[in-house]
Length: 544
Image (cartoon, rainbow, N blue to C red):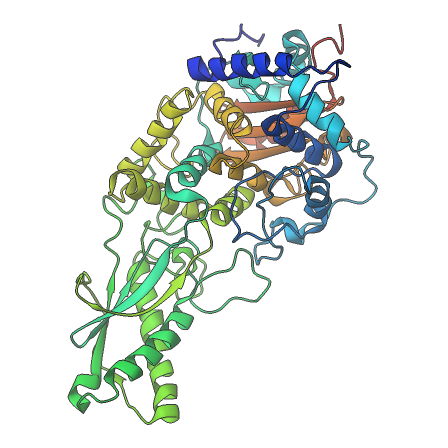
């Protein structure tokens, strides 16, 4: 499958104007000695290159003081190297998920490339361009692998978004779709935004109000869980304390309360209409503004509940009853719960009781990209809808994604029907993913879009790539960081890579006609293609 001619740059007119302006400023900045000054924004792009070369990790700058520096073994060195160059916004280590970077140490005995000094990396990102012929040459054979099937699409561009390869057209993107959802959440909802789960009292009813926290837990998690989870048990304890304070002097009758729940923040179909019915229970829960433990069933089976909001209310009701009993022993004020939980809509005039807050959007995005969390992606898509139109539906969220892409001059998806990529009816051109990644890399240092990069799994080391690239050339480890995508007969990768000379590039590789028998070998073939980009000398003039 020979690569086709590259189409227009996904950046469009405004990005072209910015590039021309930067070129003029760089020319004007030449000193008498001929040495080029490094503009601050381009230094940050050099930092992307630096941390990939040395550690396999991209750290980028989204100004959010809530986020602590990265502390896991892979990323700490990157953080140290970036001190003084850009603001880092990654996470503290430790999570209960099996593939979190904090639980996956860097493989021993790696022959990693010598880390590029900060100044050299910054200069490389400022001045290096990609060779179209070199990129095509290294991918031509890799993308012809029989295991990839009959439809393979690929796009590669420099960090300015100039395409040097764009072939194959739109394909089923699988979980690389999460890049679009995550970017929209960072930009429109806000990287530092948190979601509150609250309780209010209206009359003799305590209402648990869902705020669309994708990681709300049923009970407190361990201290090293990352990102930190809010939970309804803690909320119940705070609610009990507030009730005792508010009702201490009330008649006994007014201290007999019912529990209800409000999950009305989100609207539209709770289960995506483009998903097969077989997904229910096993693959995904109904998306809800109120759930605990991502909608898993309370019976411990590991399946997803068909009533996640009611289940969350049940957990809260039990925790509140226990907390009220403790308060009665401590204060002598008895508040009791009667009846069963029911669904309601909280009144605007209800009395506030208590609240717990989620991790920041930047932290949620990092986690969902690392482990490819479908449920969190669907919740964030609805949060995008709320932020952009006031409607928490899938349709509103998708409109918000498209508006963001238009504002970035990025090619729109041919068809996007969900936030996670579970739908087999999605069709996205690899140039769309490359355009988005380039726009994020080319954005200002404090742009929320920079929050995409900390979440990209590192080849052979972290997240959903922790156990991949094992048979790929060693050059890929420490040089490729990408979002994975996997469905039956579909495999995809989209991210950022450095060639062997430290030249950065963004890429998207997609195959959606992989035979069942070739599922693993097809995935390995795509890993090999990404590794080929890391092993090549793809800069202009490097191989000429």
